[in-house]
Image 1 (cartoon, helix red, strand yellow):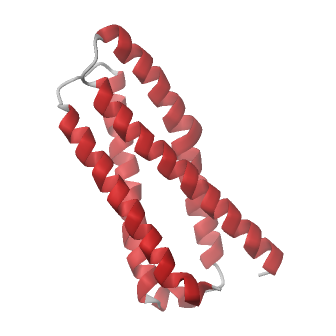
Image 2 (spheres, rainbow, N blue to C red; image 1 turned 30 degrees about the vertical axis):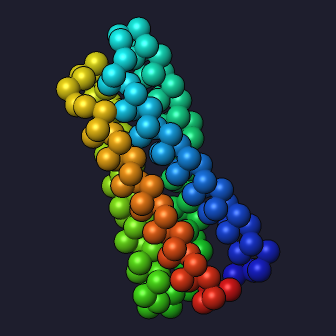
Image 3 (cartoon, one colour; image 1 turned 90 degrees about the horizontal axis):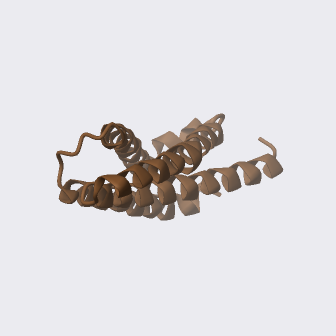
Length: 146
C-alpha cells in the first residue's frame, strides 16, 4: 500500500474514531437526561439525539470501522499481535455499545420511559472505559504498527 494512502487512511480512521466516540459519549449522557425531563423537553431531546446519532455517531463509526478494515487489508500479520486482539475486543464492545444505544434511543423516541437515569450513566461509563482501553491498545500497538 502506498505510504501516502496509508497516512490518509490513518487520518480518516482517527477522525472516524473521534466522531464516533464523541457522539456516543454525548448521546449516552443525553439519554440519561432524557428520562428525567418533562414531556416538552423530552421531544427536544429526541430531536437532538436523532441528529447526534445519525449525523455524527453512526457516520463516525462507519468511517472508523471501514478505514480500520482497509488498514488491515494486506497486513493480516497484525492479527497475530496480542495488542491487536486487545484492541479489537474493545472495538467489538464499542460496536455493541453503539447498537445498545441505538435501541435505547428508539425506545425513548417512541415515548417509552421506564428506565432510570442510572442505566444510561452505566452505559456511558462502559463506553468511556472501552474507549480508554482501545487507546491503551493503540499505545501497545504503536511501536509495531509503524
